[in-house]
Length: 200
Image (cartoon, rainbow, N blue to C red; front, top):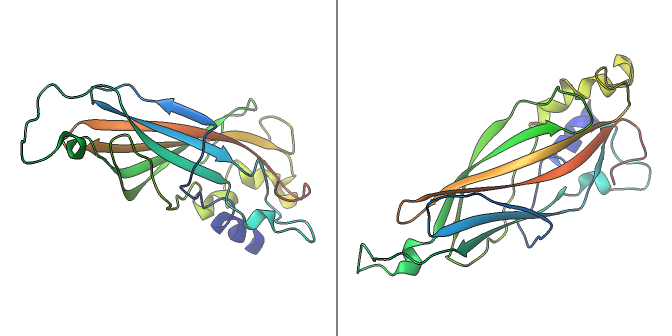
């Protein structure tokens, strides 16, 4: 139990917001700027029993996330001549949602949740470092993960396997300083298991 809470607060709980570049998605909107969210994933397997002897991988972040603003069309008219168009196209990110999708045939997932954040991205610019929680620490003691514990049989009842595979989907929401809403998301695929050689 203590190992699981430690993992939840380290490898599973934190994502550094740094330069990334693999998976991305542009959300269509009316705004003259689009928010692109991309990631570089460092961990693909989370061992609920913690690190193997001599390893510290479970204490690492799952990966890195990059938020980028892309100017897709200049506004036709500047509504406020006292403020530059570049300033009006800055994006203020104020919240993010974490949700989950099983990709192994199962259906049980942790409950989605929304957290507040505060990041401003210049028009045509990218984000700088911060952290995001991607799992509630209590989620590892609940379905579907609890089934993987030895005292509960060590097997996911939906798939009959000792591994649960799911996508973690991070969706970021905000608006330009001119008031247009923007959003974008990215996802990472993770395998969860118990005493399977450590996080990797």
